[in-house]
Length: 167
Image (tube, rainbow, N blue to C red; front, side, top):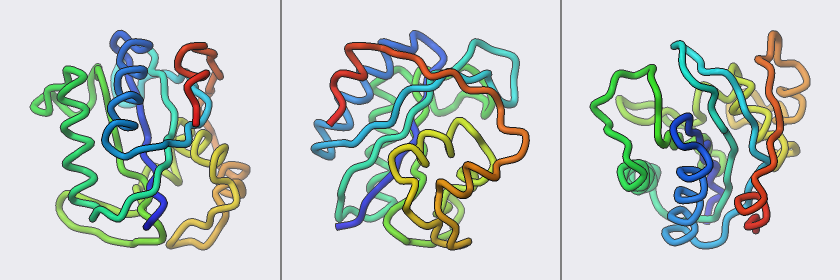
């Protein structure tokens, strides 16, 4: 079994879609570990702020199977995958890490490239897995977070029903 890390984000009916996605992730993958939820500005377009967090779970599924399941959860949350790349999202689930696996193909890049460049990904990832080493650089995620230049401002938010459901 590999430890899998997934970023979760929404800027459309954020509380509702985050709670639904967490329920669907638990139903599909079992117990999950969850970071705090952070609010951040939209990246790449002018839009409402996002709520972002990272979840972790154990799985023996292949990355392509995990991505397929994540796309299904996004669809259940109302996401249309034909939307333009940078725009409002009911749900955005990105596969960040699958154990120490490194892969690059047309559809999947592991580790996810946004780990090293986006505060809304790295901060919650470092929160729940700070001691974990990046499979390519070998740096701990906590050290990467400490060094992140020009980190976009993040604000921790408390959504009691969502945060209280942490496992």
